[in-house]
Length: 265
Image (cartoon, rainbow, N blue to C red; front, side):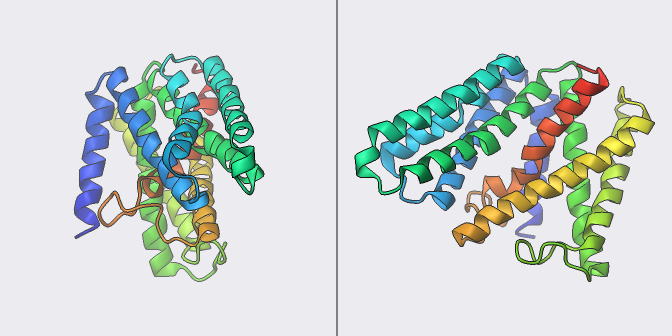
């Protein structure tokens, strides 16, 4: 129950935010959540970064999220360039006081890409026509695939797929995740009268589930390399915020560009 109740609260709060909150409130919450996730990332990947240096690094990594609030993908890319410039500036300013400035540049720029840029696409999706629907659909796909993968893996999981990164990930779990993700996508699409054709929705869902699994494995790699079990402890029974959004981080840009190439943007 220590995991179920917080999980339900998070799910309800997220749905309320998507359905009832205006875009500017969503953007504010997204920015705060991204700041927490970036802070968790630096705590794992670059623990010597403390004080104002960490604050500056978090602000640099958040540039794409801030730019996304204007709803233009071109500004997000410009902000990503500012992220690069910001970390280069930090390196120049602190070159003599850090043993490994290259670590700062590589870790900081990765944070800007992995957390800043990918989080920005959540805002870009929200500002699209039917933006709330696209985010609810994506959430349903990711939540359904996580649930399906968990139970299919427990019941039928034998063959490990990435045992050195995530020992519990199995081929049966992936299959179960794909099936449950597709079912959840179809249910959401039916009840909310989504604009996509089913023949497009099903293969798109399969792709998003696979990318979501890759997002989960990406954070697992970071945690393994950092020697930690969870990214943080802010969510009772669920670890850190980054532990909860890892699958969304890569799947949000994927959905955005699927809609773009489908002609829905």
